Length: 227
Image (cartoon, rainbow, N blue to C red):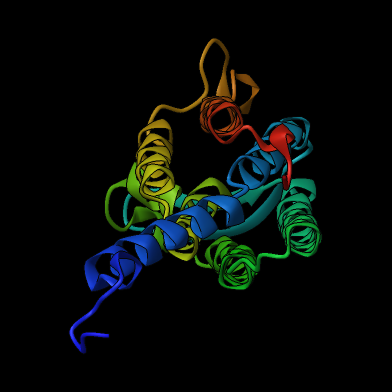
């Protein structure tokens, strides 16, 4: 038998191509992008009634021209961190159960940990600003409001999920969603006075999450199961 005999299946280029295709298939199998998007959309829409809860005055500071005060509904301040932590626990449980059913692991832990940390950090930041009213006078008010917004924290966590899933489409959605949060933070309530207006800061970002979740649900077709 000649010593130079080689089998086509041992072609390094074919092996490398097969390994790359297998990696792509595993990543597609791991993904369940639609689920966290739909859960977070539900959390966002559920926050709307809490937006109209009674407000409590925080701290007032006299400046050279006016008196600056802060106010925030305590119910909303309690709702967001509680709802987000529970949401990330549900998402983690879903991914773990799905991994066990399919026999394929998933890198959901960085996303869940980042989401919980961001939710708690946002709460601490808001509590700090309630007792430091002058912070609201620094920089563009709309940008400051967006950066102290739980919806913006959701967008940052989605960037982590996109990295964990190696999902370019989710990264694009996360960046677009964050941009929407930044824009809507500068709009303010519509068709009303003060906080009684239409809550664009919740409805529009929530709608982006909902539509994105539906889109990924249709694209990934999870009902075809683990077959």
